[in-house]
Image (cartoon, rainbow, N blue to C red; front, side, top):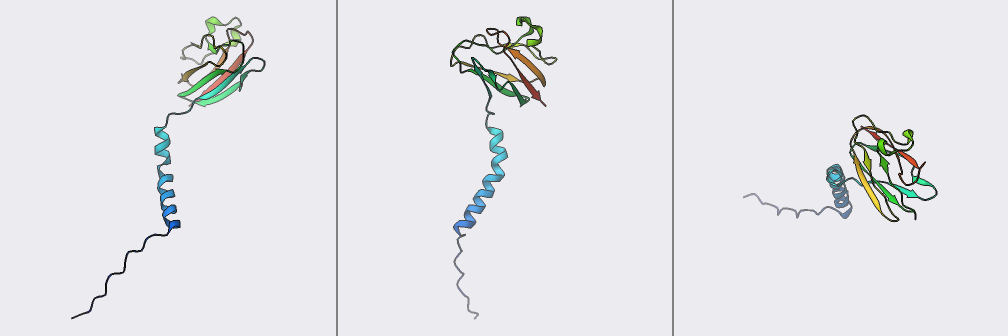
Amino acid sequence: MPRTEPAAPARRPSRRRFLQLAGAALGSMAPLLSACQPALPYVVEIHDEEGYRPGSVTVPRGSTVRWKNVGVAPHSATDDPSKAHTPTDAALPPGAAPWDSGPLYAGQAWSVVLETPGRYTYFSTLDEGLTGTVTVTG
């Protein structure tokens, strides 16, 4: 009768190999996990002296843009040509709806989701001459 050898015990992977496998598994899941996360808003700060910072921002279609008044005086973020004293202060891409934050007092913020690609020129109804732009790609 043939003699059988006992099976060798299963070898545990080394810690290094385990971490390599875990890293690879998590790395392959990153696109799926990021698709589940809501996109963070692009933030434009409104300063009393410097105005909108950044003054121009480019975002992909469907992005949330958030304006936050970090100054003391009230300001707004408005892209409604009917409310502009100077016609060049407001411009919307064809088919885009106008928007207006209303007055934003110190520390207040307001957001809008921009779906229509193109260039938006916006202004503050409370501080004539204060303008900024958002370009939506896609």
